[in-house]
Length: 399
Image (cartoon, rainbow, N blue to C red):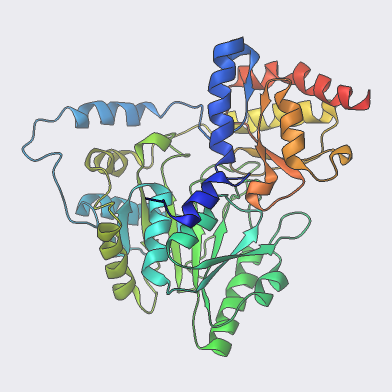
């Protein structure tokens, strides 16, 4: 019996799962050469340990002997967890968000899949500024839709004109990620305002109001005093999808949530649809213990200056090696341009760097042909030790 043609073709395509493949390649290389001689920048797997407050809460909560402690709860999550996320979103968005706007989810990826399933009809489109997180295309396909990339400006700011060209009555949503993975771009309030004005305009023209989906797992990780703009006050049909994978360094615990703008005209129906889709997609509910953990610790203090320090260290190495890059102002990725000698072939540049035990992700997987992504959430030791390898890799191109 054959597997799905789409899944089979996607799995075997050159760019399928390339980030994970590089990560797994890194495990093999570390076993072969030693971990200190492999420079793995492939996966956005935070190196910072979770805050002490999180660790203490997890140990205490996980050891509870309370009856049915690990049992089912309502599909939307515990009321106290929903209230905590409502409090968090209220602070971030500057509007009063209540717990009935929140659905606890299995990470941001689960949240996006649930939301897209809830809002999309077969053949609908989701517009995403490019470059974008590589899995978005699969998530949209899972919901029976089409992902339409809108090329960003040269500095990776939003190109509103390119987004507008793709919009019609089939547009279910525009999905943005700020700070952006892979570029580290943080969209300004002016950019968000112009985007929301476009969405309002198109809603009037087409009779269908697209959702604005805000994928924000990196919201707290910004540099040089830059803040992520709030969209709830600007556009009523906006929805936050996020997690605690990056800000609290809990990627493997798979805990996140959906927050619907309380002003959304169809809030009640949308929340109900997301709760239903959480159930029928097989997530059922977000992990019980992790709901308790983040309800207590969502505002635990974290020193993100360590990521800024690593950003400065890796950009200094790129400057010395002669590799062009877009300076990031958030998240923990460095978007680097493949040297001219590769003629835009980012896969070839990744393969070249791998000869020097440097592992990174090709930009083609992010709809960013000719670029590569370095995840500098690796240890500081890895970053500093990679200097000689990067310099030699670039010097050897001139021979």
